[in-house]
Image 1: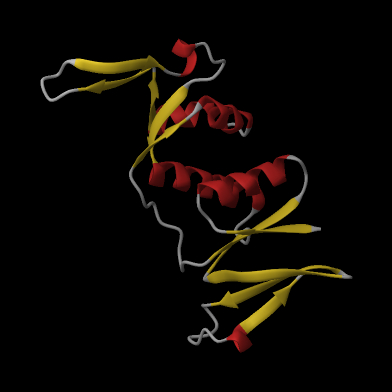
Image 2: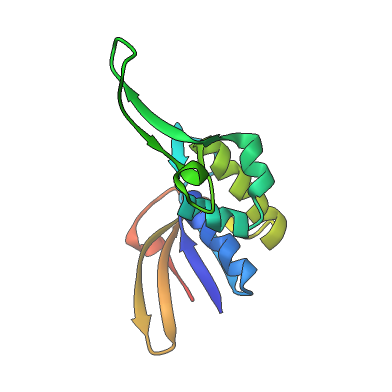
Length: 159
C-alpha cells in the first residue's frame, strides 16, 4: 500500500516523513512545478515541536528558528499590554519555536527526498478528487507536466 498525500507543504511533507517512520510507503503529489520556500514567520507550538523532535529535527530547529520563551504584546509607547510564557518556560516538555515557514518547508522537503528517495515528491501533479471503489481508493490527478490542458480527460486514476 502507498499513501498518496495531496500537497507538498509543511503538513504534507511531515505526513510523508511520519509514514516513512512507521514503515508505510508514501508519495507526495504537489501541484506546483517545483517546491520553493514561500511564506513568512510562523510559531510552532510545543505539540508540533514534539512531532518534529520525534522525526529527528531537534538540532535543525535550532539552526532555522528561535526558541520562544515569552509572547508579549506592547503598545506604541513600548509599555507591555499583555505577556505570556511559552514553551518550556510555560511548563511544557517541548519548546515553542519561531521559524520562517519556507525554511521549515525546505528542511522537511530535503528530508523527504533523502529518506524516501527522489521520486517521493511528484511536482506538477494536482489532486482533483478521490473515490472509494471495491478494489480500493482511486485518486484523480492532473499531471501538469505532461499536458498543457487541464480538462477532465487529463485525469489519471492512481491507486
